[in-house]
Image 1 (tube, rainbow, N blue to C red):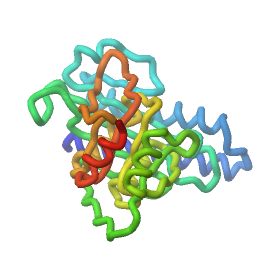
Image 2: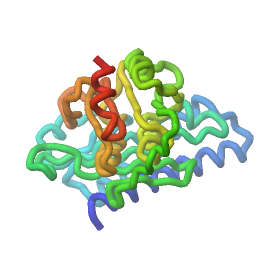
Image 3: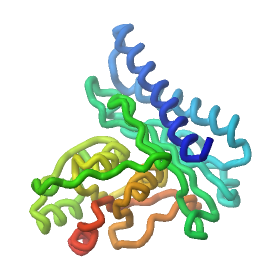
Length: 252
């Protein structure tokens, strides 16, 4: 199997762990809340590490839920994973906007330099896994009002500026993976974020989005870079390619 297939399979398996945990908590009459979120982070991370260590033992790993191993900085291949993106949404009954992220960074990527070469985002509660194994086809917008997806709790000023400039509607959603996949599936037209993220928040989502032909960059238009010593990567734009120039101009 290819790295693309592995990324999709790993995301799906971690997602299955999370669905079972959530269902068992509900069946036993437990409250969805902080303890469930903590258990989800731990259990999904454990499953991903089991798979990666068994099948790619020589590769590095950067996970939100594991201590950082500086040896990854010298590795030729590093898996960047977020075992449960959108922990808050995972712990809220009925919400489906949480995700599992699995991406592969390689020192020599498709274009010769370092970059992401495979990725998958599972949306377990929606029964979806979107990946670079079979890059999705982004539907046409159909002429409706443009829609920009933003954080439920802290919509950034940059997104508001873009919405004003493009006469677009702001749509609130959880998980960064769910927001990015909403652009991929055509439910929204752009995701504009500033104010803080880490590499594991965006690696898999942007790998899938780029494979689908969407524009992916920092707010200033520069490339997103991964497997750096400091994994802080605070802003990004994911959008339909034809909107990129207008969105980036409005972000300034």
